[in-house]
Image (cartoon, rainbow, N blue to C red; front, top):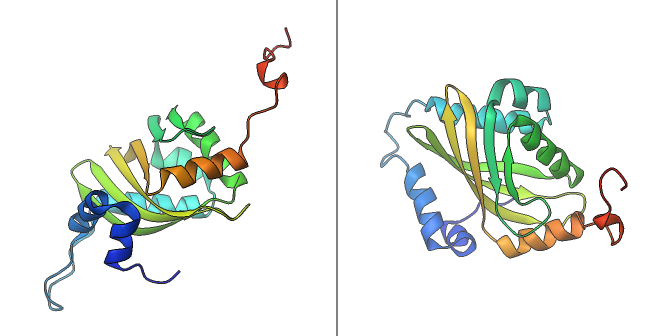
Length: 180
């Protein structure tokens, strides 16, 4: 992927969200500025993305997710909603894996217990979704306890997820789980 320009980010995400993300990341005012030490919560999220890229569900459960994690996915599609607990979040990730979903972090910034992430998220199976996402992660005791996703183009995300994860046809959709 080519480098994103500030104008492209502003067009894609909107002035408010992009301005907040870019202001949070910041940059040294001169080439002589000493590099700042990385915030431990930023390192945690950076390491989380590395484990996610490896599809290392064991590491996600054992190293990164609090047992009571809450992960909110916006939208009006079959995967949308709030997932509670590591089992539900990992089940959601298993569904994303069916679409070959990938994430490439662009910027991370921390303030206290929160880390704001801007990343490119795209699908490979089928291709068709390639947008910017922002996530707000809340960290407690070195673990992710909350994540809230924000899609740059929610309509495109909804349309993609409906195509990839359609509801079962009626009457199968209306059958009781135990067959009654």
